[in-house]
Amino acid sequence: MKNKAMKTIIVAGFLALPAAAGAQEVAAEKVTAIQAMLKTMQCEVDPANIEADGDGFELDDVFCADGQYDMDLKADLTVAEKRKE
Image (cartoon, rainbow, N blue to C red):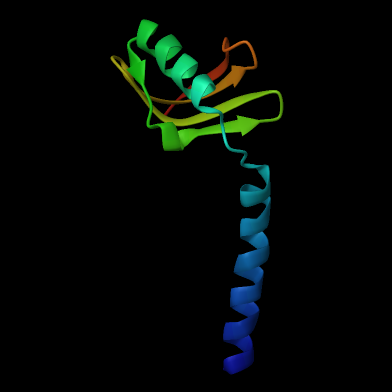
């Protein structure tokens, strides 16, 4: 039983690595710019839900006047993809 529990913990740790490795801290001025851009769209997001993703940004749980979305932004802060949740 002990070995099975240890294997489960190890597997769970490896599964968490890609998500943690891909997340990068976003500079405060970028967060401010993203928040301002979202405001023009009647949307808002918790800064903790903004992640740098390659040459753009990934936003989770964006709340807009017409519903909740996940969004991908390009580096210039234009919307690359907007998915309704």
